Image (tube, rainbow, N blue to C red):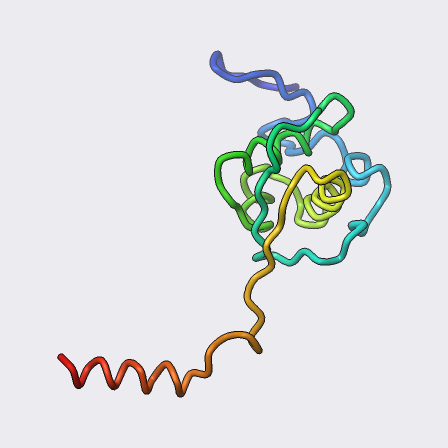
Length: 129
């Protein structure tokens, strides 16, 4: 049975003790992989303005709401939406397909500055102080 506090809205697909009443494969319509395989746990996601959510799953609407005012990583979205990472990635792929979100991949290790250069700069700054 779904328990609600006075200030909560109805979420019939979620029970506090039993967790999701709808199986993850139902949320993703049986899909196990996102349409775009560019997302990892630390990819940042931001909602792309106002999107018509009439034909969007409730979980995807929740993701858009979470990412409306701030960039969140895929892992943060999964934690806040209380969904498995795999489900979040599939839903994010759907949202990417309709340009409802913008993603920013983390900096690749190859693009990061060499640690020796950073150490040399820090040493130089320490000498100035």
